[in-house]
Amino acid sequence: MILNAQAIGADAFEFLKQTTELTVHSIFKKGFNLVDANEELIFVGTTENGMFPFGIILDDMTKNKIISQIEVGQSIKVTPMTLQFTQNLQLNWKEDVYNLISKSEGIDIAQLRENVESYAFDEYQKGDFKSDTMQKLIASLKDTDADVEQQLRYLIGRGQGLTPSGDDMLVGMLFIHSIHPYIAKIHLEKIKQLINEPLTTLVSQTFLKYAVNDQFSSKLLDLKDNPSKERIAELLKVGSSSGKDTLYGIYTALRRSGTNE
Image (cartoon, helix red, strand yellow):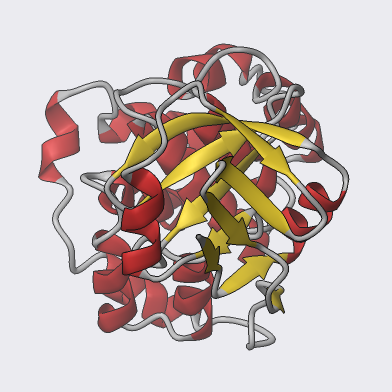
């Protein structure tokens, strides 16, 4: 059986052109992740959590058919046209290529701040991500002379799941930096260094590597194009807590990054 993808991210397209074998890394409700020998990752699944530069988009029925016949650790053969999951199951990946680019030149920071601040973040005040802790990190990231390594090591990888909460928060902070730069260059380089260390999950490393280079999911780019409560509500649907964690990172950065100056 040959199934068809709906579309493929530009980075995933280039990646598949240069590899011959992948391994199933993880499987979940909305899709699955594949990795190569160098631990480069692509996501294959639906758009419920957004679209990604490293993603292959499937409809729900196609996703379910594939998930029912694969398991973690399984080897997948890559050909110039297909992913071969079994002798009888292939996915045609050479479909329409998409690039994730913001449609707007800028963003209404005031509207974004107002809408983000309308949400409560009380649940973070009794755990590892208290407001004081997060605000100290933002202040340090702005200060060229500050030593941020221990603070970043505290944040990266902290939490549970494929994308720990601390990583999602850092993505939110980097999203604001991409709009209104506030992180000192030396600290941005430190973030790049740390996310290449084995401090967190491979999935989180992938998202952070893109975020530190100003590349984000369609959910965040949609928010940049239109920072409305409706777009925020869509972000909050991502994962069990990933959307809210990302929004908390955005909230934290908006409060102290200088966007109100």
